[in-house]
Image (cartoon, rainbow over all chains, first blue to last red; front, side):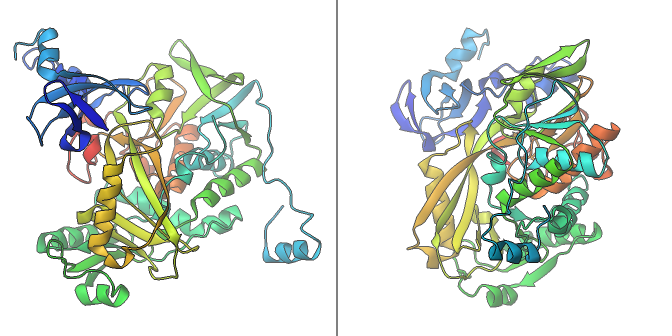
Length: 94
Length: 416
């Protein structure tokens, strides 16, 4: 797979480390969330067959985190964003 | 029809005109007591043990494609019970004992071959860890032997013992481990279940679940609604897809694992060799092909094919271990979809929906578990309580901190 990096252009997926579902960006607030909320965050996955937003880390490159939208049935990559931009758009400060 | 040597001779003398189809192709009935979703090894074994051991009837197995067309026909056929943890080892040893009697039980030749499996040791720390695991196995009634470097050399003199990075220092062996012809396992269970009145319904995909007041009433399928008192889902690889029909999210990601077979060679590997440090394991089929595999590709996938970098990695692992295979040509490469769970161990449990039961999360270890998985799932379905060896395989173990994490990786499914 070739991942079109928003800054560096097309890069081989081998340069990246895969983390998983991009919902991992939305960590519950440790001061208010209960055990069940953290359980769902850490262990439960939607795991769709089809479009999937996921976190890839460009370890062998610029060490940026990306949110890649990819089809899990065809491996086609539909969209790539910097995870930083996605997190900010969702209201995170950093 | 009972299979035997006499039957083969009799049929040979009469032009093989007496062989009959080994299972019926029934139309689905309006309602069953038990509907098993998934006509793979685990689903077929569940139906068989439900009928035979737990004396239940009115059972159907629904399969979206053809029987045994999924992971039971896509694995590398290895059986073993070399686990460390209390939650796992008794279950896998139960499974291995069932494998040992399987062919007589089913009256079907599944080519169960206890040719022995070895895990190679490269460091002192690894020897300590493997010694501990071997002792745990023995304590649970399994067999284990620690082999010295010389003993490994006598078995497989052509291994690369002096690899600069991973010199071979010994091995942990389970002599009762081995291989089984995987397709025959599905066919054997299917035939035996059919003989006990189980309806095996193919080309019947579950497209929805009918749930009323927290209770399952049946499943919507491509062949119409099928009512059921209890529904058991055994569709590892597609678990999240099927359980989404019941509104459930699972502690599972689907990943692709590739496997490989080479052209046929003369016999030279008479057991199973695993080279964990190099992400490579290998055995030789009775036809002569080298059957081997390595790691999962590492990203969520429902495509039954992987990508080239993992093929290169597996080939490098093979070359590091046994340079002799360098000029062997690959015959086939394929991928299977794994239910990778959050601790690397499976789930056999009830769900919050009354009458709906789940069996999945087998990671890449489901094949060896087939008989015990079927038995324990049938136990749960028939008696509504877990089998003693499968008690730890619960959904709530993640909430309660009772993970069964053989590898100690935590909630990183692509690293288990």
